[in-house]
Amino acid sequence: MSEEKKTVDKAACIIAWPAGHSRSPLIHNYWAQKYSLNVEYRREAVPPEQLTEFVTHLRQHGYAGANVTVPHKEKVMALSEPDERARAVGAANCLWYDGDILRCTNTDVAGFLANLDAVTPGWDRGLESAVVLGAGGGARAVVFALLQRDVRRIYVINRTPERAQALAKKFGSRVIAAGWDETTGLLGGAGLLVNTTTLGMVGQPPLAINLRCQASLVVADLVYAPLVTPLLAMAKEKGLRTADGLGMLLHQAVLGFERWFGVKPEVTAELRALVEADLLSSAAPKPPVPPEKAKPVPTPKQKKPGIISRPRGSPG
Image (cartoon, rainbow, N blue to C red; front, side):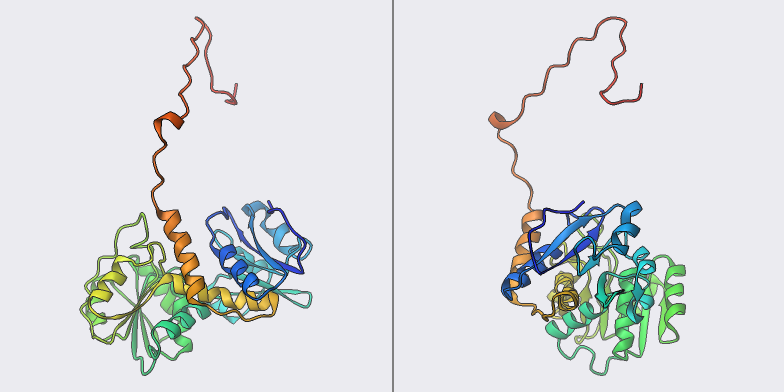
């Protein structure tokens, strides 16, 4: 389960199943080196049936805290003490020890706000109306964040209306469920549009939307693969201010690092370039194997008459 461990003062990890896709080790180990800390951030691939044991004995496994991602973000709340953000969002992605108490929070809320503040300063000044596309965990984090900034009306639009209605009911009268066919009309008076769906992600259909809006509209997309989604490309063509999903990913990591290691790290252009390069390299098509290096396909053995051949390891 664990990666090979070296002797460090403290360690944290990402708990996932699978865990190989996470960029969190790249981000946190960059900060560890930048601030000359003898700490390490690792991957822990923990299957669902082992999650309870791993989280309840996190310190015994050598960790001062952890990030949590799919498919564990909801279940981990019952294994720790959630704060207001985690309870509101219904999912936690960060664990840390407060004495002997294991606490959890949702750093997507802070990451979303910090990213908007950094790249579109003043976005919330006098903001009357926002439109949020989607009604999953990302949408709940965004809605909670916007309520903290006193946005007066938050329209939640989802292709399954019942999910949008449930989210609106959870957060109160300032959150209003709306139909997908109302999107264009609502954008005409909105100051912020946030896409929390997977539409526009690599391998997913593009987000089909008519950006008929004010020139002051800010457009944010939680998707970060690709770095510039079709929605963000459309917004940039119209001269609108934008905030991408990579910025949110970087900023949401700040709180965990500070909780575990006692240093508040900075999101820098150098760090962004490092993660951008990693995303681009993983998205690049792999070069074809030269014919001379390709492994020859073995010739199948001739079957003997009267004997049924089964694949190795198949039930007998």
